[in-house]
Amino acid sequence: MTKFTHKPTLHGRKVVLRPFTEADVPVMAAILDDPDVLRFTGSDEDEGGSADESAAAALHTWYTTRNDQNDRLDLAVVDRASDEVVGEVVLHEWDPANRNCRFRTLIGPKGRGRGLGTEATALIVGHGFEHIGLHRIVLSVFAFNPRARRVYEKVGFVAEGVEREVLRRGDGWADATSMSVLAHEWRARQDS
Image (cartoon, helix red, strand yellow):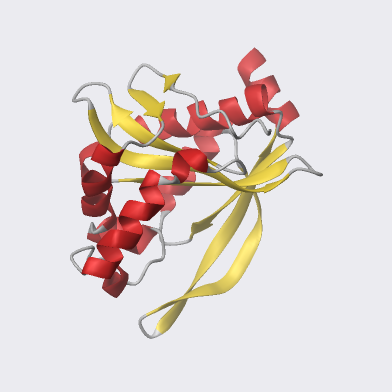
């Protein structure tokens, strides 16, 4: 049993992070079809469209099995003001020997511009360090998503380097920045 087996509910002032339920699947389908979500996650706009029966079935399977995974933590981001799911936060690609994992998030249109993503990021990162015992959490953010980069910097992530031309966008290429935060850096920020 790993510390990823337990799927907690985390409470913040603006958001609640909780395990996914079957009722969340259509909400997440709509969020994943949002053009900004598709763009900022590096997805092809043709990848959206859960209207396709096989894509809808795959999405249903994906979200209804997240709570069964013992090597990752996927949580729904719920806006406390509306009690609506507005996105997700994920710790994944766990490396138990080095106590590292990757972080990713996406916030749909109803959750943007009010600090929900910042609080959700801080909650799951804090959980990763304080309860799972992680040493390092890493992410990648595309150069065309400066708003997300500012959120990550506010939470304590530090740029490590540029991943050059990792994503084809139309006729051009986009870079991404690799960022990480370490457990001792997190603790120092909490103590200050």
